[in-house]
Structures are given as structure tokens and as C-alpha cells.
Length: 174
Image 1: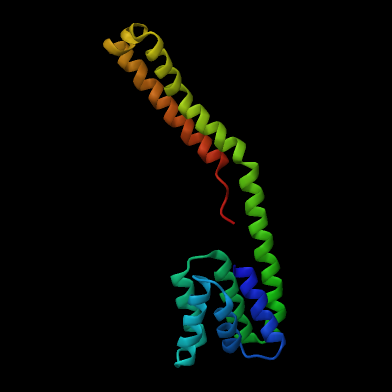
Image 2: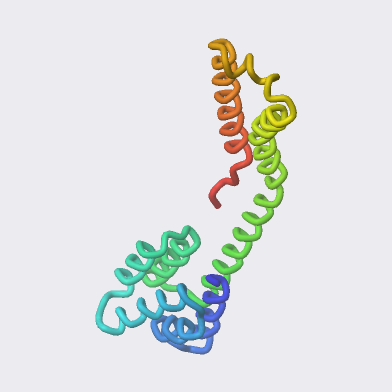
């Protein structure tokens, strides 16, 4: 949704519309929640709030690295000058690339995440199957202190292994 919004704003700016009017007009066509947040920003600026302060409030309401990048670029452009439409086009390409990369990383780590779940559930499943097929086979494990210690050690090993696998396959924040 953010790349489409940015493309619309860049197009409106290229057509000669001011920033606040571009934000307001594109926000009307953008679905919620993004559209309503930018419409709120445009209303606040129209009522006299400074653009920089309104942008800072927007970033506080919507914690997004991509949105923070857009806001930072708008604020820098407002203080130094330049072609905002071109800047927004470049940022749109960057945001799209970051989203695509995040999807690729998620797809590449899917096998590791699934392996982690299987290895976590497998010991519990096997114990349940053994219990169902021959409950007396599990008696030494469940009725002696050594068996309890072994169950505790197994549970700790599974928990540690699960945490390690999750840490290995967790996608970095882009």
C-alpha cells in the first residue's frame, strides 16, 4: 500500500500539486489505515500544524521503517530543496525492493521454520504414540526419580533446540 501511495504522491507532485494537496488527494483514494492516516496528516497541516511536526506524529502513530525513510526524505528535501517527486520515486523503488527481499528471505527460511516445528513436536508425538500402544512401557520413565530427571532433561533439550532453530531461521528486520 505504501509504494502505491508514494507513486500517487509523486505523480501529483509532477503534475504541479503542492505536497499537502498531493498527500490529501492521494489519501482519499488510498484504503485504510494508510489513507486515513495521511488524510489526518493533511488536515492537521491545513489547520496550521507544521509539516515537519505532522510528519513526526505520523511516524509515531505508524511504526514502520519504510515510512520513517519516506518522512526523513521529505523533511530533508524541505530543508535543502530538490525534486521531491523524483526522490519519492527512488524511495518507492527502494521500499518495493526491501519488501521483495523480505518475502524472499521468508520463503528461503520456511523449510528451517518447518523443521523446527517438526523437531519440537516429534518427541511429544512419539511419546504419545508409545503411551497409546503400550502404556506399561512408559512406567519406568514416569514412576521413578531417574525417569523424571530424564524427562526434565529431554524437555530442556527440546526447548533449547527449539530456541536455537528459531534464532537461526528468524528473518532479519529490513
